[in-house]
Image 1 (cartoon, rainbow, N blue to C red):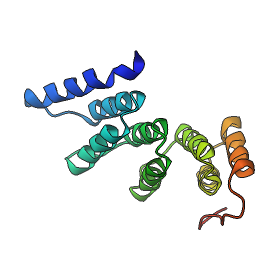
Image 2 (image 1 turned 120 degrees about the vertical axis):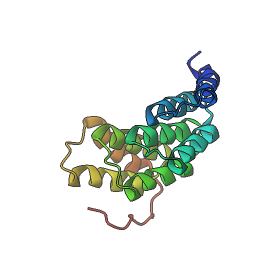
Image 3 (image 1 turned 90 degrees about the vertical axis):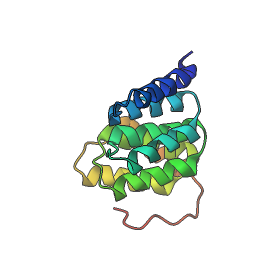
Image 4 (image 1 turned 180 degrees about the vertical axis):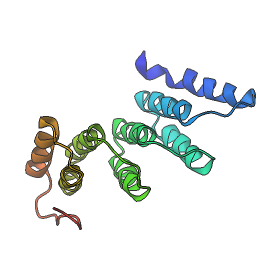
Length: 154
């Protein structure tokens, strides 16, 4: 049932526009999350683009919902692209964001990205959780060997 909530969520967002109200970034983020739960990663990314092209500024919650939608849809490269975007636009991610992002990198075998994120977590003086440490180590062990670390590693 949870995965089916994206359609009513999109309908509610549409109603907001029809009544000439302005949706908030919270409204958009909730719909992006619902789309992710429904494996509608393309719709989620489209909504995230709408936020960025409109008057609103996406929050870490908006980006996290978009990244999770991509991961749930098994579109790792799009998730990693959004991940990089978060740092480009200088949105301040918290430790939960890092933890979730590292877990996604682990699933994709993207050990370089997992290590990079772990280093960012440490450099931001956030205490890595056991889950973040474990996911980073698993990504490094299970990842493709021979890959070069990303620029700016710690």
